[in-house]
Image (cartoon, rainbow, N blue to C red; front, side, top):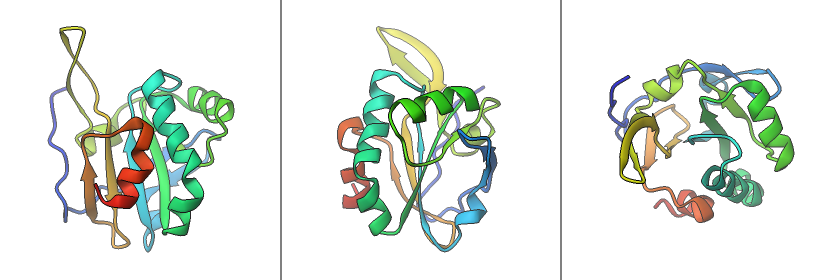
Length: 155
């Protein structure tokens, strides 16, 4: 898999369908007319991903009050998402994308570095999609411990 480009502000958000942690199929088109926070994260129950998910959980009521729907996406399977969501009482859908179709469509796959080694993996990126299904905002420098504030502040 090669590096794909992030979507630009104003671009149509690619529609998708994927199962959430309870096995229910979720489609982006189901949320037309609402603002969607579509956040991509590398792996369930890892330190950074847990901080990010818990920050969104802790500010979920505020996000909802501001008209946002929150959807998390990683390549983990439904069972992994179920355990992660239950362990941390996550109130929003976590979409299983093991074949990386959504991840690829949103440019969330690419080169990463850790401990001096380069490898390919899921980029931590968040898209805010407007009521018409267009990309309104792209957050490429996600702050895991204050991500909801980034979203609400338009950072």
